[in-house]
Each structure stands twice: as C-alpha cells, then as structure tokens.
Length: 118
Image (cartoon, rainbow, N blue to C red):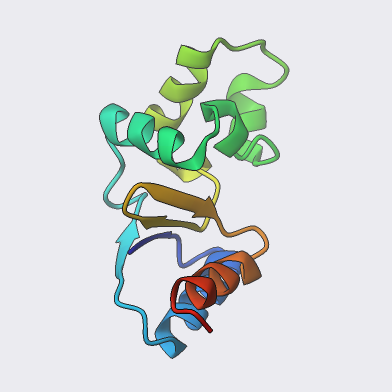
C-alpha cells in the first residue's frame, strides 16, 4: 500500500498515525515533494472511481485565487492537479487496483482492518 501524504495536513497525519500503529506494510509518498504524473493521476482516478474534480481541494485559498468560479473541463481539472499537486485531496491510500480518499481518516483504518480480516 502507498499513502499519499502531506504532513502539514491534520487528517493526513491521523491516517499516517493509524498506518504506523497497524501491521500493514506501506510506503509514504509526499505527493507535493514527489508529484504524481498525469498518467499516475489518471490511474489513481480509475482506482478511486472518481473524476479529477472530485479530488481537488476547491476550498483551498490557492484554488480560489487561481480558478475562483471558473467552469473547468475534465481535462482542465486534471491539469489543475498536475500543475498544483498541493490541491490534491488527502490522504489517499492506494492498494493495488483500489484506492480510497481518507476523509475522514477513519476510512483508512476501516479499509486496513477489513483487508486484514479484523
């Protein structure tokens, strides 16, 4: 499993704390320091079963300043995430061909427990 993590985010830290106290094997990827490529984002969206606009932090001040109330196409939403990875919703747990947005972070705990049969 891979946890797309941003340490400055309290929800992301909560999910990481759970992962650290679980027996699950995982890696951490700071998606701002190591941004996802367009191809990785496209694959992630497929795993999540979501569109790019569904995982953009539209309430973030940066988003509001740059895009405000502009109507965006699906490709433009994807480009927002490519150009500004900090706007990616967090945390996201990727597990093979599945992924979940950990909002609330308890969803990460529930997923890992279910996977481990607990």
